[in-house]
Length: 365
Ligand code: PLP
Image 1 (cartoon, rainbow, N blue to C red):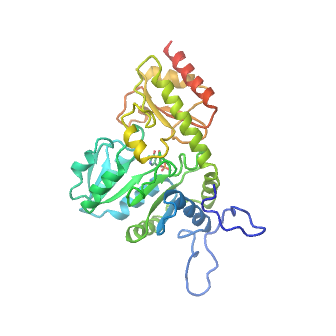
Image 2: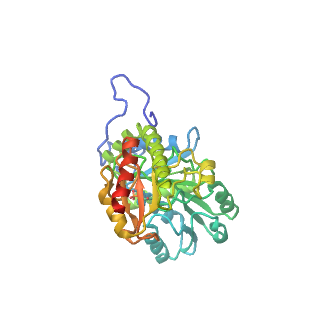
Image 3: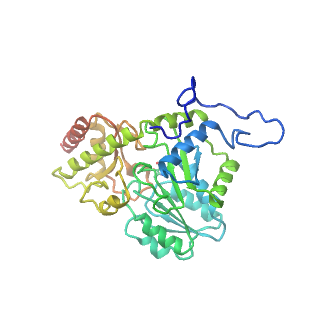
């Protein structure tokens, strides 16, 4: 609610407005903090402080950098930490742009191994790796891995660990507390929650690895605009409200789908019967707003999506307005044709569950 807000100053706003500046007055020696708009901006500084307070409350020495998008943040970690000849371990079932990143890493001579999120298979491919990338819960399969366990194994072999914390948000999971070197996320999703901006961030314990990420942001220039950064910070005031409401409704939707007479293979880490549940309750405080399930055919899935009234047929997730999509339409995920990823918003929970069940019934006919 108050994360990143400046100390109160009489007659000043609680959250100062966005600072639009390509350059700052800078007579004499060019010392910081604000020199040129690609390096630093006071609106980012407040947002970075806020995200850092959420990702690692009370911890000194944690540095946060905001980016133009989640992919800008992800690329900044991978491309700043890895050199030709290094080996990276990536998820085989993570966000669908990761294979594109893999191609680019390999073009630069980085060796890439992959492992699925669940089942600890990462342990078999860690030897000699420089960096382990995990995405937990994974998008769209919602598998979960034991961050602390993988961090211990990776650190014992001298590898850094980055965790994609997009789906959980820092209120759901704190990767740095579990030992990770970087917590990286798309702020486009539930962190900001209104589906009206793109943002990314990298959070890590200072030192050389974060200095390299900062340098990468400077040379690539993948920076957020001040307006986006300010909107994101404003949205953080409602993060807990949104996350509590959306995640509780997601569990109610998952239970309703589980109890539906057809077997839908519903996945949600908060469901006690879910394969992810045991690890999720150990390392997560909340279980996310995404539910996935599989309808028997592509046509049935399309009829279901068309019958929904409170849920937009749209990609992305985490927004206050529910969205759902047939994930297979993109071609990038190894999912069945009838696989649905449903992102639960902040609508009235009873209305939303009723809408989903009505659409299931109508689409069956
Ligand atoms: N990480 C995950 C888990 C995602 O789902 C996404 C986007 O869907 C991204 C990263 C990329 O974020 P952005 O679209 O903000 O670049």
